[in-house]
Length: 353
Ligand code: NAD
Ligand code: TYD
Image (cartoon, rainbow, N blue to C red):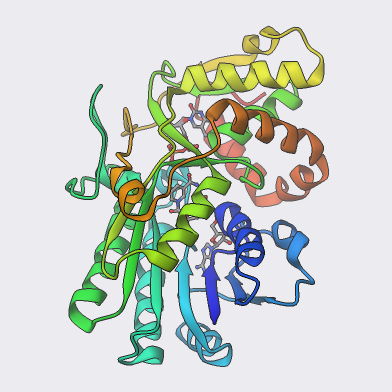
């Protein structure tokens, strides 16, 4: 069996490819990625010479390129992660999100349907986010029956892609599964998302920007647990079904930032608590969702999956990884990312120093 992983050079994609090659020694993995600012072949370096792995550079919006990879590599499963993934960027440039997340997903659906015809030994797994459900109040959690209510251009584009996947199943009979996961963290996360922002700025002794009062709440899942959930749903999820995935680890942004900075101090021999002084409260993100949380009863009961890494363990492993991978950080933090960072933070009380 050959499986196409789109977005394979990104954060979750590269962790997933490494995970699947270990877990499934009898399957071939074809990594497909356009190598945008957030995708980097360095993320796939550990599996570059793996005999069951091939990398193909390509854009999911390019019909011919998608068709060629599906046919040439006799793909019978797709795990689709390629996306524009950062909420702050979607506020600045929403059309990029419509193009990749909506047009790109529909292109993949069309080409997979075309290549597979009526086969039922195939599967299209669409990887999505809990952000499509909008924002929660102080209590409760999203589940697979929660109505969609996206608030950012990012989550609106992911919501649209989810609907198209569902439509391809209902209208054309494409065998699909969908997953909606909460915030991931861990190795190879591009340094524009909260946890690597905190770490890279602490390492450089720069201020750590916390939006608003830091009271927004997220649920955090260590990326390896997400990869295991994706493999589980791809193999054993029911055709046409959606599964919520989460870490059952809710925390406010400020509590999380403090926990990371304390772990950073511990790992670098600083007085624990000293780096908390780097926190700078900056203007809030427009339309900032207050709280996300996912009820994972369905995946737990039907497929026996549950998170295994606690937030404390995951933070310690993540801090260690970023401290040990300075060369990776330097390599991925150049050029286009620096320009975005300067544009974004210069509008936010000059928090970038
Ligand atoms: P990422 O930004 O790190 O990686 C995205 C990858 O997609 C990059 O390698 C990029 O080069 C590639 N890509 C972008 N546009 C492309 C195109 N047009 N054609 C081919 N490749 C393209 O993102 P991530 O955090 O790894 O997220 C991966 C997926 O998981 C996304 O679909 C995201 O919505 C979803 N998700 C992420 C999280 C999270 O916390 N990071 C949580 C739930 C779901
Ligand atoms: P982020 O990592 O961008 O993920 P998402 O918006 O998809 O949840 O942000 C996580 C939370 O951290 C979110 O509430 C916004 C906040 N945040 C900051 O306070 N400061 C930052 O520099 C960033 C990037 C995010």
